[in-house]
Amino acid sequence: MRTYVELHEIREDEQEPDLVRVDVTDWTREDIDALIQELKQYGDTNYAHYRLLIHYCRHDEGGSCSFIKVSER
Image 1 (cartoon, rainbow, N blue to C red):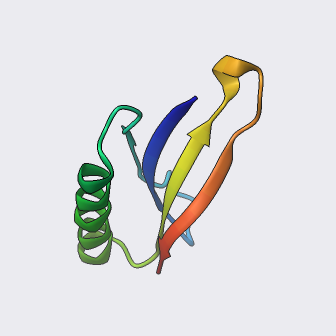
Image 2: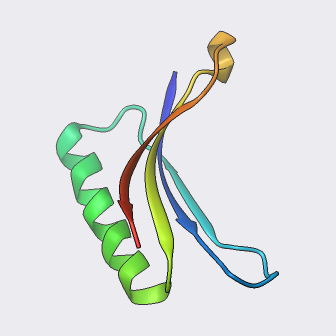
């Protein structure tokens, strides 16, 4: 299983939204928490609306993904 922290821009127009995805599979919990705070600050500064998720990807194992919403604006 791979673990990602993702920041998804939510747009109301037809332009392609931004996506930031960081593979944190081998990171410590403290480092993941620090990244989440940095991405939240980045989202607050740069986007009117965004969603911050933890993405558990099980495709390599033949499974499906699951997501936990961390923050949304």
